[in-house]
Image 1 (cartoon, rainbow, N blue to C red):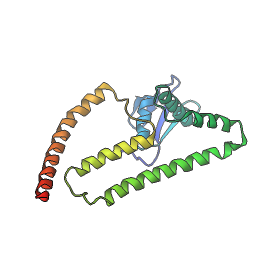
Image 2: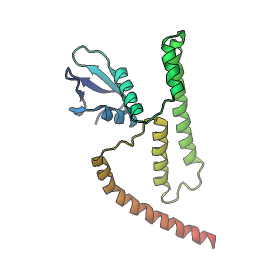
Image 3: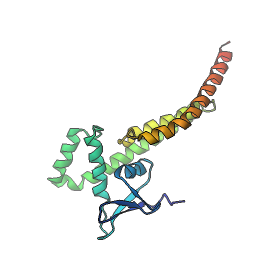
Image 4: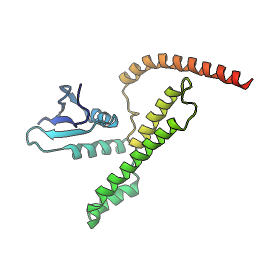
Length: 185
């Protein structure tokens, strides 16, 4: 099993193909974006020169998502970023952005923690499935880059497992409705 604490090393060959050193296969920018959405850090190195290309590729991923209409960065923020490169504020911008995103992650984490602690219904059937859906939704919202661009193959693979999950959720919901109706009597 790969060590998820250390960055996933991606090597860029002279042909500009990207190679995942853990799985020994080629990857795309979308694959790299998916690794990051799943919480994995990546490091992209040019095989010939040894240069770290991570920043360049992460910016390219963001630019591609923005060009497809997945606008996460408002125009005024983009303008301010461009202005920061031309001013003395450049030294403050990276630290400010880093602190802002850390606060966002902490707030999201605390909110999810409070949802499970403060909810007296945590032991009820079906609640765990709803909580998992809420966490996935919050992750997608806070991550900024949605994972809505799934391929047809991924969608068909997911649908097979979804039928089983849907039946289980329906059963749990039915049980929950029965229990609630008994409490109301």
